[in-house]
Image 1 (spheres, rainbow, N blue to C red):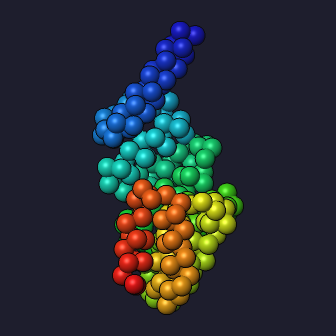
Image 2 (cartoon, rainbow, N blue to C red; image 1 turned 180 degrees about the vertical axis):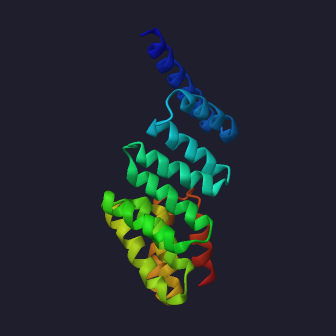
Image 3 (cartoon, rainbow, N blue to C red; image 1 turned 30 degrees about the vertical axis):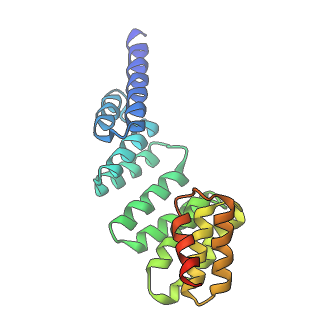
Length: 197
């Protein structure tokens, strides 16, 4: 019985230390703590997920994907977030097909998943010019589920502008500026408006 309590304490200590290090941006050290916890409980979905996030942030893409898959097999509860992370990694690797497939799966698991809609919009906006209308569709879906999402609104404005819908694009940019003058995308929106004057 004692070893079970010690094991739980080791896992808890590993998880807490790893989480603190991740918050400080020290993903390499956090990964070591997640691995220490995995030595005790190798099938912990939460520890596997945390280790996968560290690997992703350390640009160890294939290792991260493998670890995310292992986390899902181990019963990680938040499968839609795991799929979104995998989609992001595949995007970084230039594999848009797998990225889109994982985004769609994340949306299937959580309809209305704003972050997945944003990533789908990004993926489509980076493809051939005909895909820009698909990107617009996904940014609009993000806004439908989160009306105040300034990132989606800014990116929608960029899509509309690329399609020659300047008036609609400007309305998006103005809404972003009015909502939050200190928002990171604000400079881009402001520059777009000023360049059209």
